[in-house]
Structures are given as structure tokens and as C-alpha cells.
Length: 285
Image (cartoon, rainbow, N blue to C red):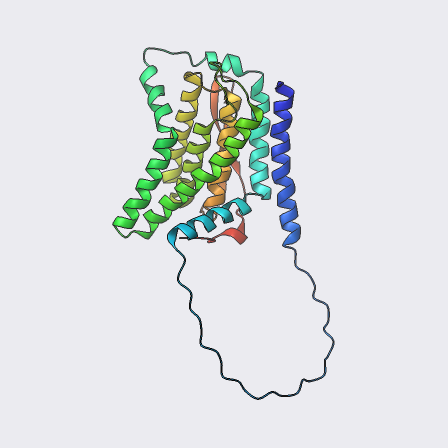
């Protein structure tokens, strides 16, 4: 697949999210009710004995979790999510021409080998989902609703970030720097930035800053290991941020961070966004 086609796929994906968000906003617009005509009073009927109420069993935790995941995907199309993906897609396209040179800046070195290998391990799917499940289990064991809530959001964010990442990987089919398959976008970057955004929304900047630094470290490790290009991790990071803020719609922060390219390598771009007020406190465990 040619590079221009890959770029158009990214643009089309961002455009689809923006179009879906506009349709959703239009569908939620209030409709002025038509005046009702007065109808003749119906003849009185003798009172009847009400039927006994039928109580249904409460939904299982698995069923509730599945419904929450469905709600998360329904909330993905939004103006601000489209804006974040637009920023990530634009930066990814800008970085595309510099991809080979940026990878060369992260050549294997004696002092950085262990550092970046550890970062790549931290971003692995088994570590990310394992940490999320462990957080939920600790919250449940110690009866801490806050810790349990964070764990639930981390699990859901991993799923919401993973699905579009896998779809794009098998659609774009970009080769990795080491000639392996499925380079774009980076799953490590998507998962780590999704987790960082969830922690940021729950804990504020005291938890968000370290989490974003870890996510950036994970993303840089993928360049060092020649598993991804800079454009892969930039758009993967944007996907992760969108997933994290969608799942944690109750969040505290009005700021988002997107991985970006700098003259000397990579960095983080800070962008201020407005909360989706209608989504705050929705679907809380």
C-alpha cells in the first residue's frame, strides 16, 4: 500500500469520527413538540386490581461491563475526540517524511539498551491489561470503590483503544522498520497513553504527569527497538488519549497531551479541551 493511501486512510478515519460526532449532536438537538388536540373524555372504567409486580434479577457484573463497553464505543464520536485525532493525524503525517531519520536517533547504545527494553516491556499488552485487572482486584479485595473504579476504567480503556488500533493495523498494513508487519499505529503507544489518560482523569496532574512520562518512555522504546516509526507512535498515542478520556468521561482535567516530533527527537504537545459536560458521571461503576 502506497504512503499516500495510508495518509488518506488516517484522514478518512478522523473525518469519520468527526462526521459521526456531528450526526450525534444533531440527533440530540431538542425537538419542539407539536400542540396536542383536545380529545373527548373517555368513559370511566371500573377500577381493576393491579397485577403483582414482577422483579427481575440484577444484571451480572459481566453483563454490566459489556454494556459499559458498548456505551464507551457509542461515546467515541465527539467533537473533541475528532479534534484530538485530527491533531495526532496531522502530526503523524508531518513526521512521516522524517521517520527514518528519527529512528536513527534511537540507535542501540550501551547505556540505553536496558532502559528502552524495560520501556517496551511496560507497554506490552500483557503488562497493561494485567496491571488493570490487578488494580480492579485490589479495589475489590479491600472494598475501595475508587481503586476498583480506576481498575475498571483501565480495562475498558485498553479495549476501546485496542479495537481501532487492530482495525487500522490490518487496514493500513504498513511494514515496521525491521520489515515486520502491522506497524501503524503503535499498540504500545495506544495502550500506555490510554492508561495515562485514565489515571490523569482520576488522579489529576499528580498522577497524570508520571503516567504520561511513562507512556512517552514506552513510545520512544518502540523507536529504539525498530518496531515502529515516529508517525506510528504519534497516532497511536492520540488513539490512546481518545480512548482514555472517553472511558473516564467523569474526569477532572480540561487538558490533553499528544506525543509530537521536535527538532531533536520527540516530545509532548499540550492542548486544552473542554469537557463533554453531558457525559460527566456517566456509567460509573
